[in-house]
Image 1 (cartoon, rainbow, N blue to C red):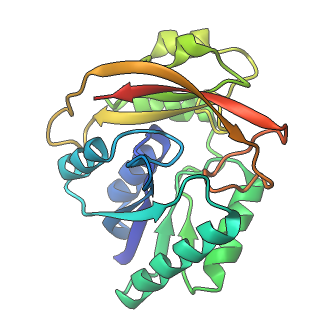
Image 2 (cartoon, one colour):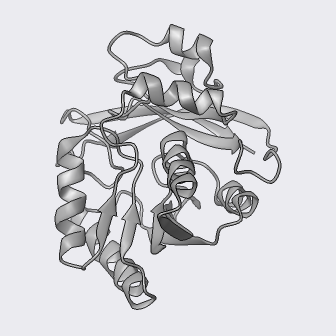
Length: 239
C-alpha cells in the first residue's frame, strides 16, 4: 500500500473520504493533519475545541498532526507553514495526500499545483460524486455528525447545532449544497463505523462572528465566499 496522510477537518466529508480510502485498501493512512487556530486552540474555521479533535483521533485509532495557525493568517503565512509540514511528511516517506473535496475545481487545482512542487500526489476519493448521494451514504453507513459552523450568507442560526439527518436535508434551502461543499456549513463527526465508541460531548452556546473577506476563493479554510467587506458565521460550541 502507498503511504498517505489525511487532510482532516473532523467533519463528514473528510470522514467519508477516509472511510472509502481505508475500505479500498490502496493507501495506508498513517496520520491525520488538521489546521488549528493556535490563538483559540480550536480547529480552523470549524471552531471545534482541540481536546475534542484529539479525542476523535484517538477513537479512530490514528495519530494526529496539527498545523498551528495564527489568527486569520495571510495566504503567504498559511502556505509557508503548510510547506514546512509537508516537507517533513515527505522526509518520513509520505507520497500521497488525501482530501475530502468534491467538486470545487479551483480548489483542486490549487492543491495540485502546491503539492506538485513538493513531489506529493493528491488523492480525491469523493471527486465528482453527487453530493446528495454522498450524504445519503454517510447517513446509511451509520455516521453521526453535528453542524458546528454555519455561513450566514446561506443559512440562519437555527441550522447551527443540528444533527445531519433526513429532516435536516429536507430543511436546507435549494441554493445550499447537501454536503455544504461551497462552505455553507461545517460539521464534526462523533460516531460511525470507524469509531471505537461514540464521542460524548455537550452542546454549549451558539455565537456569531464576523471576519474580513478572503482575497482568494482558495483560502486557508478551503472554501469559497463572496468578496464582500466582511462575512459572518454562527458557531456552536461543543464541550
